[in-house]
Length: 122
Image (cartoon, rainbow, N blue to C red; front, top):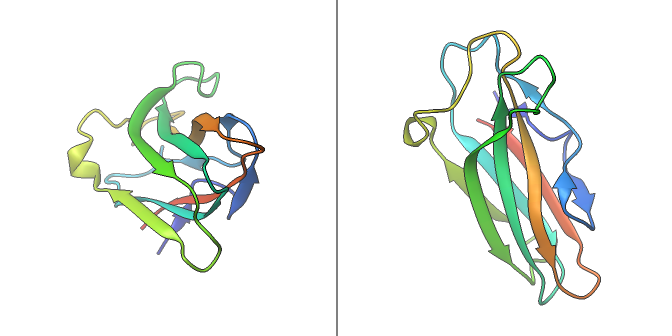
């Protein structure tokens, strides 16, 4: 059963944390992390990190667990799905208090760029 990291599909026009987080505190294992890119402006580029935290001040200790680079144009209906299995991220923090994941757009470039993404585990 998929678990959202972002709050469904989100559209962003600037770098920064994307709305939504997934608590991984109660997990004993983590399935595949997936990133669905539903749209990206022509000529734009984006770098998206899936970050984890173990801090009671959420993401003050953020570490990039996986980083994805994408290049536009991506149009709705021709989504690009990127994924990484948790076994490829041995330092991923989960299963303890305050553990969580989020998506963070590290870079979004281009003329009036717009990025639609949905991050989740499956």
